[in-house]
Length: 355
Image (cartoon, rainbow, N blue to C red; front, top):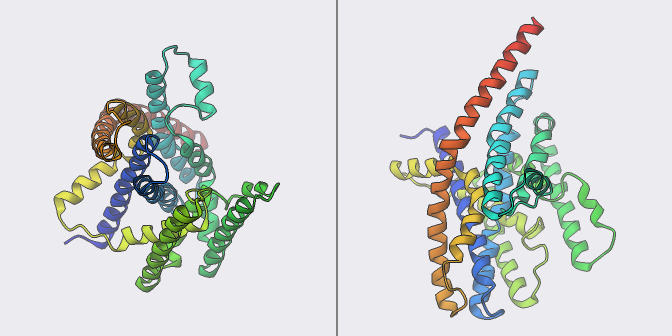
């Protein structure tokens, strides 16, 4: 019998795999959508599916916040361990994979050119989320201490303020009110909001009844978005931080946490194994999708394009996962061990000096 703790860990692994599939789906659909005639039934179907898969973006940040803000920081060692672990798990894979992607995409290789593109976010791999994540991770220990000291009603107020701030930004954008986007510099606006929400959501909505209501609201938000797409021909901020996206993300988060149960041990182990490579998968998938898509004649009928899309999705998933496993085991993990030994040696020396 699986313990509650083990089941919860598996549920988060399940989330990671679902998010992997959603992110992959977004970019596969973008490849075939450009060859579709706009505003016909197939085009709307692809647009709606893309909107659904885009919920993976806030969910990625929510899951990151769930675990990174849940740490204890009482001593200097806690801060050191946190930052070292994040360098190992986020920055090191990013640097390694971005170098590989740069080599694949460029014929004239230059260290200076790579550094300029990497620091400017111009490595061709859809790495915008990395820069958001690194920024918030740097401040996570301080935010963690702040959030742990909040009472339940303060947590609710904190989340409500963030929701309202994103709603204001959405309304201003809709009515094209100038000079208001500077409001977005506040930390609760944008993708950072979901990072905090991932830590707060389970405390704020602890009961089954509350979560069921949240799921229903999420479904209503998704239907509303579909209707807006179909009848208003409006898309701006529907897939950026906004009330509709937030409600969909919250609903799907608790749905995956509470409603999707897999009791077959072999499937659980397979899902948890795949989840271990989720971050490397994110970093690699786009370069694979773009090349696999080039193998298919996507300029023919809509039916063929849909079938090709399924083929591109499956092939890209298998190749990306395989590459993720190889790169992680052959390059990333050995480098982690070397760097961890170096950090351990430095920490031990620091402790000796303090004594």
